[in-house]
Image 1 (cartoon, helix red, strand yellow):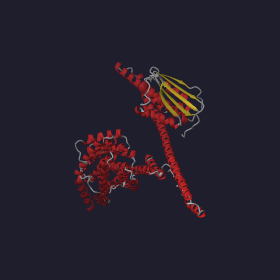
Image 2: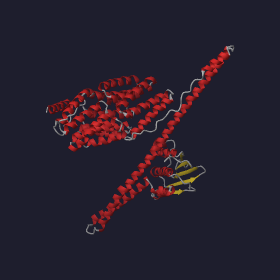
Image 3: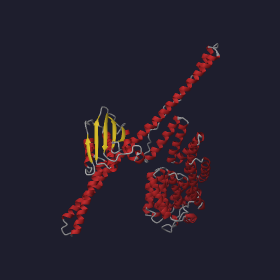
Image 4: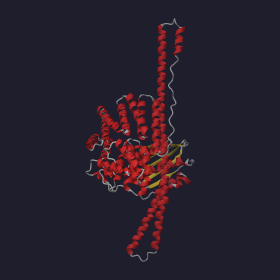
Length: 627
């Protein structure tokens, strides 16, 4: 009974200390620690609540677990926090308690975000929104967290959209952590877009509000933001000053994640200013902190910067090792639940040993009477040989370092292309087997209704007929989209029938397309034919969308060692010098696929007045990519 009273008193104390939103129920079990509560006070309360909950209800046990989860998040122990939340999630759902369930999902989402598991974090934040329909401050904080994830992935468009939601929900209520998180992410977006002055103004506002509500954790993040602005605008002294101010607060709070980020930023600052020794020291400390708390993104960024430090020093063996760690951890984040990382890079070179000086001494002993000039000349020649040998060795290592990075980039491109085709195939199957069949069933049902619609008046009969026509057209459109995404005829009969099928679906009133295959009779690997089909499909789509052409000619034929593809239209032409700036994405997609096949591609105008466009593609005849 004493524990029950103790539980109520502790929960009420935290309610008075700063819970500003009204809970759905008046129960004291739903009053959680305020943002100004210290980690030690949260831990003490969690232990007392856990002791009281042993003899209490499921609700009391859930609240105790949430307190412990909040403590672990505050101290960067995100995996322990996840364990606490998962332990009581099923109980909260069984109780049908929206407040407790929502807080558990929020805790799990924040843990996943800080561990770098962004897809899982987005899913959990989205779930938590359902449990706070009228808690505008909490909803603003959730949208700000979602925006922060998109900002960290450089998707500034999506980040801005969710920041607008967060600002709209915040309204005039600015003295809370939800608004501060929104302000912090907005400052980052402004900084990434090059609006440094705007970012600094937002940081100043955030610092003022953080001090007013005594939220040191948020104050530290804004100080870190200011330091970054100064670093990227070449003001290193100011940057260093604010990084250290941020670090003092994070050290006092025991926030190892933020400490890791700040040490990373200090390392980057010293690297930019040419102080590689300090940069290496700070970056290693950042990586050590990140590793200790399972902060995978921190390790990724740390190893990336460390590899650049070593490369600047021409220490390419160390650079390759750091680069290997960077990609290994990064791939483990992308794979999420898969624990296996890509095979680590291994260094294959050892520094050559110096020439044996004993021979030199022996030679000197045998030739005591040789003149000083001869000894000097021999020494100079030996030192020169060592110098040039060492120089050649460094050049060889640097060359192989660059080649290794190119190989890695090519392998990454292969994985992306394969993943893209698999996703196309999945979506095409879903459209055909799911949406397509549903629409077909709807069309058949409407046909049956139409057959027995003699009692309908004229207007309703006309409306029914129009609806049947719309559904039939939708079925045809779904079928066409499915075939465009994954043409079955390509796998069954090959490239040329697939191209003919694609051409047959183009409206001849808008564009007349002719295909010349010549002597194209070389049997091809299916992956190769699929990629070549995608290249031609993208070229044709560009003509349909942008060229304003009335005629298109496609030629594909075999030469001695190449397959040559020419795609020519009579449209408005292109500005070759500016086309990468205006349409980089579509053209880059074509170039990436051609390079994957070890081929080449060129764009040119057909006529002297720059009208018409011709795309020339050459693919090696016998090169087979890895499927």
